[in-house]
View 1 (cartoon, rainbow, N blue to C red):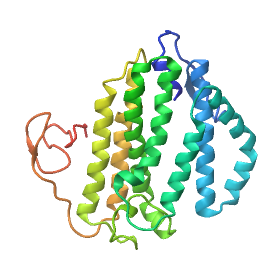
View 2: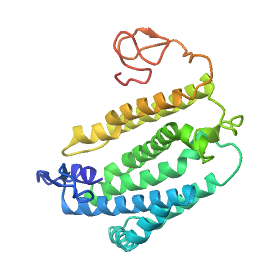
View 3: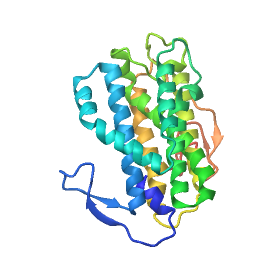
Length: 282
């Protein structure tokens, strides 16, 4: 968040290296941006951290989560006040959290867009507000769109990584929720796996396309790596985890021409240039 705010700022102040304010006991250093960017990023991180702890509390009734929430209560309240002063819609974030809780408590099958929407809208609000803080209003809509797809992608990636664990603990899982015949967490069929894979890579492709509309004055390569290049590797690893839950059979792809080199491909990756069906390099 701090980097994205600073990347849209016209001033040319260089970033500096310092100990991470969230993990000051570690020797590693982190990049710091301008003061406004740091305040916003810190506030958002605290709110999201508290949301994660509350999620753990709901799922596991964790005594550790209870203790941490009690310990950080005042800090989270301060973060909420800070974000309100920065005109961030804090209440909208809480409303989306409640919407997600309602989804997870509902029985039945979901559309994949429905189950990923609350997280998508939350990330959308968070990213788009960086344009307001930076005073670059023309970035607002592109960041709103990027955030929606990024939040959806994060939801799918988490569901891929936690599919087996959620099944064992009878917890809600976004992927299991979209298949009506999978209420007992049966192994995924190849068509079900391909649906998830296609959906995830389409999201990453759209993020990459919308990134071209952003006006960044600096750090463009860093932002690019965070928003979709690095995320692509994370997505590949999460799909590898999900593939372990496949029932028998192989995944069959339709034959298409590679956009990069024109070679006909009938798998996820082109054997000639290494790009996958959605244009990402293997």
